[in-house]
Length: 313
Image (cartoon, rainbow, N blue to C red):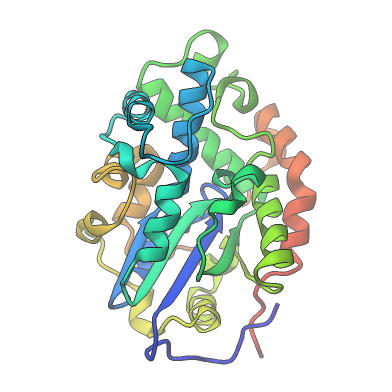
């Protein structure tokens, strides 16, 4: 799609959902946008609803409810299980899908930017998509994001001592076998399905942006993105504070969640600008799980890529 005509975004507030795959520069992108005045950031609230659901099901063989009231014990258990997995404190009342939807819709901030994984809101949970938001989608080539995700998740769970057997060997680790959180669609199919649902039911032309485009031409694509969603743009957004102070105000399932998850978000926390993309990975030197998963979901990436944001000449 083409960039839409400029808008200042100053007369009324704007609410933006940034749905993405993991390791797609999304955290740095949000840190950049958080510098816009009167902006409230929500950090992967549905992702931790989903992770809590998976952990609760894994340990109890029961489906966790979607409402907090009357189900406090279930969500306290889910929070405790997540704390073991993530080594940070979770607030049980922030985990239910219904709580996230209400919180997003009730935000009184002038601008709201919420970034989340497409895999966090699968078909059975589309009813919890928040009303009043402009939906955007951040994609990245599967070889890039799956390779990066594999490195991060292995480092995280290996560091916690939670990998045994072949999974403890990084060369033999297999995402589909050893990561219970890795979805069957490798995150890309889930994002694609959500994109299709949004197109058919909410917005026929949602914004799609490719992470490598943003890294290659940050000034042009950041400006185009802001104009397309109605956020005010200025060149000052191209460089931001490298400190983590701004992250402390981000809304998440735990107050210290972003700062504690250094294996996943450490680089983005310390970022101050976009860097050029790294050399494209050589599939001949990648592990079989990365190649296998990437090949399986390439068609979904390619279709979304055909609808990506295109700069006006």
